[in-house]
Length: 287
Length: 133
Image (cartoon, rainbow over all chains, first blue to last red):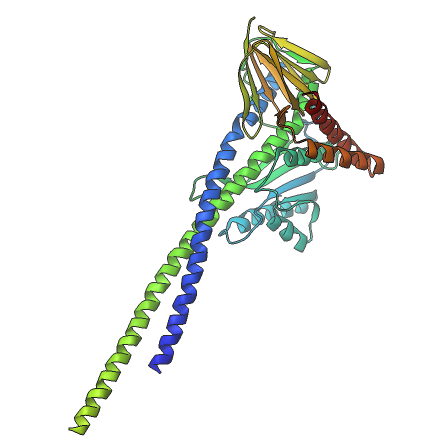
């Protein structure tokens, strides 16, 4: 009986060891991807900041109106949901998708309509399975996102906003707080709100052809920039979350191996003791 | 010749930064050349060749869309995509042009048509800039 047990334990140790190798490798891959994603997210900041400052300047300089700042009451919302392309990232996908679903339900309960644009394979799968109005799908773009992709999406949103498919656009994604914490969050991108109206520049600026047109012309870039940073932010969070999950999986595997080795050694020792007892009792019997 | 500081930014990186004598780009109201000590000015850029003059010589880049703003002898250009003439991927631009032309011919919806038109403009601009080199 002892030998059979030993074989089983040995097999289990082997299988846990190979699982540990995989989780360890995934952890390393995730941490190197995380570093790259963080660099890209930082590089995108000045672009967005410049656009934002100019928009603030325009709205401060003139008493202007734009279709993109007006509040309307159609009560129709587009939710842009950004999740990951792959699982095994702890609660990353679950948290953001849960928040998105709650938001969608809230909108529907108050009698509004809710369209959903899903970015990331997991988001697409989630909303396809459920009964929501999923209008656009972008699986698998986060890792290799280019500015062309981002402008494509931004132009679609702007075009549909202009033609009044919806009067509000909300972004739901995961933001990277620290390597240990990533939080799902909701951000309204259209109509444009919370522009800082404090005047930054002293000189009178010429807007060609007019402040309104310059402002409206900037909107696709502004939304594109926002989406781009959100997608990078979400991607960095995904990697951080996966790294943490895989780190604890690796730790757990290590603990399991320790316990199993103890069990194995005990079984081995028991077997040896038994063999010695058998031999010595046999020799005693012969004497 | 007087110079000013030009900064060109994309979401990926700072594309160009340095002292420049003149920059020429096309905006929604037409071509504009900016020299040193220009008045504060802001306009939207349309797909066009962007010319940057430095040490008396022009360097040309293909710019898609974006914003040019002049403030206190500092010119800032923000754009989703810009490439120097020797960096342009001609094969890709050619493909993008053909795809856009096909979409325009099919004319599935006004929205699709409009987007294809914009894509065609960008692709044509890249090809023109690359050819001029």
